[in-house]
Length: 326
Ligand code: ATP
Ligand code: MG
View 1 (tube, helix red, strand yellow):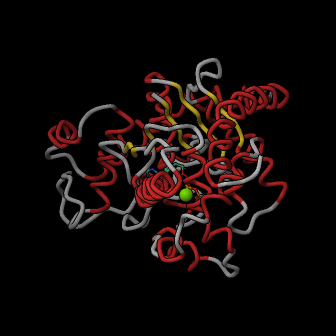
View 2 (view 1 turned 120 degrees about the vertical axis):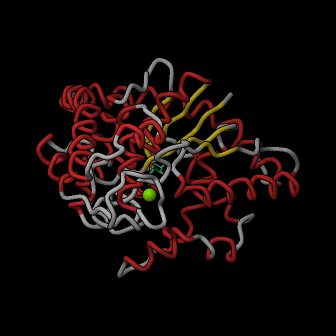
């Protein structure tokens, strides 16, 4: 089985990314041949600083290895190192409609936050479709916010296959049961994101323990006193329950029973401590890996070589079937 997932090089990754991304990568790499891509070409779809892009690419590489991706087993690489991605995006643009892209809620949300809405921001789901399809991917482990893009990828694959002949495997998204949509601790109606929302409600994977503790202590809760999972009336507590489930490995019902009769204060303190404990060993490995830039570049080089080999036959088939003279 082939597994592919991409993650944007954009600032310090969050507890949301851990839950929908890193955590799933480490478990799915055991199930087959896995490709994890630092999607640096996606990073330039919103305004970016060149120096910050370099920094986030390297720090993201360190974080991927710190969360247990094994470079011997999985292919971890940067998108811009493999030209096939940019080429596939152009070719697939011809089998994607303007109407489909205009319907993407991600684009609607993001474009509202930008002063300058780039053409790249609009077209980015096509680049993402190419990322996935180039590797004959069967499953795509992602968070729930990527569901619409994975569905579009499937539509693009089917359309290409029916116009030009069977070329692509039609991939399937895989979403975690708990924690597929971690919310901002200050704005529980809004997704926790690397690059938007109240920063006090965004828990970063490299936050110091005291910072994490404080973010959970000040997390917004709901009226009432019961620690119960019921997202409509209790978005804050439901979010904290999901976070506790991700951090402790216990199911939401087990946690509800454990905190039956306890106050919000005790519960929030415990969630903070569980997250600190979860991230402590990751942070330690991260600091070691990040300090050795030469080694990170070497590992990314190895990943790029493997990714180039794995994607080349698909790109060639795309050009052939579309009628390009080769
Ligand atoms: P950016 O704001 O730069 O887009 P991001 O936080 O949205 O950053 P991505 O790199 O776009 O992060 O996403 C990486 C992975 O993390 C994806 O699989 C995405 O679905 C997942 N993810 C992002 N935010 C959350 C969240 N709040 N809860 C669960 N999964 C999430
Ligand atoms: Mg994102």
